[in-house]
Image (cartoon, rainbow over all chains, first blue to last red; front, side):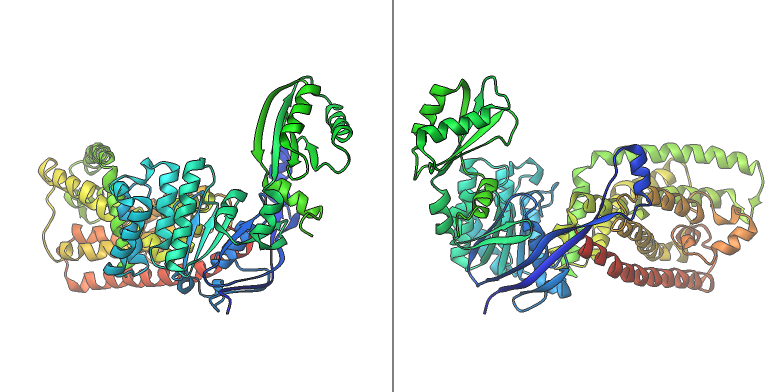
Length: 340
Length: 263
């Protein structure tokens, strides 16, 4: 039986249309001008015990809203959702006992107190017995090196240390499922790697089901066999991570700053690239950020070095960065039928 | 229950972290006590009693009132509003905890901290420096119980205003209004005996007097016995039960707004 079962699940929010300016703000006080936002729009999925699932999508895709429905904070507008056979919002307090949650942007630890105090308080909250508590703390010590941080005030921890503590804390009561909502946001590469290894080890040792939402395809590639891509409240793809990474792992984005950039630069860049590499070259051009031109390259079809050389020769480029493909780009490619 | 004790203990410890703030609270309180002393001296102007209270009784009431003020203010309204605005409330709601008991535990921890760090030192200063004598007796013995009930009632008001933040973007204005209403109508500043008779009659039927007037009267009029004190405590306890029930019912409604409109 699946641990989490979701069928035709929707969550719609009514949002007041705000007017501009001071006068508008006053008129808003008496306004009934609402629009409906379909944060989650008819999704279906099943998650088996012990799985690590990557739940990804760009900002506003509905990831956090789904998590909040699974944890019983939000009530669905329509559809069914059960976790361990129970409806989460119907009995929030009982369901909370089998779940662990980490919201990357917030902490469940006591900001002003030493780290160990938060763990002691959580021990009481979840009624963890002393033997289990000691055993788990031992595991965290081995994985994270928690002991060094015991006496440190949470507010003095680095973001990465805090996240490792938060993740450990969410596993303290041996939950059946742990939700990690953006656990690697704002962290540098080495801490990301540490977090990935800790999460994968906790999943392996305890068999805990993990739902991971993230912006970072790298997280999913490292941890999850299964990936669910969400956009605008709908599931675009639900399947093996391999299929996605084999497709997008080869993608890199060249970010260029070009001198004398004007309206014609993008189209002339496109033309010249088509002229040099042919029609089906797997290179796309877009300007998403100000000053930067993004050239996304499918290395399986065209080597990155060739594209870079060509552009450097033909355009007055004064700055270059190479980055992995962004979530937005993946979603765009999926829409265009990349995984179809 | 152990989980809520752990929370209260945590909240108590947070208080310890900010230990230097207490010095200023005590200092501010002492300045107020000095001003109040001369104010009430000049109001009495040699009169033996006013409204049935001697100067000593009135001053004890006012001084003790300002000293327990810090105990009975829970700030649960600010806390809930802040947590909703910052989205921290979601962290609480993923725990197997009742939000009202969680907030009450936080308040209790802070109150115990304030009791040890502000109220007890101020009472010492009151008796040793200002030579105010606190009459020993049955009233004083019942005072802690009455204070606990008062805390529960005060908490319910703060918690209720906090829950309003589920409905509106900012409960700041309502918080301030509540603050003023409670401070004036509960007898936190002056004994209710000094209010016009008509207003007194009305206030007797409202829960506000159960927050400050009841516990303070127990200490300032200790000459009375069980026959006066028992009904006073009975009224307090009734209000505490009624308000706890009402706020619990209101929570059931307020949480629906969050569940439907998003957190």
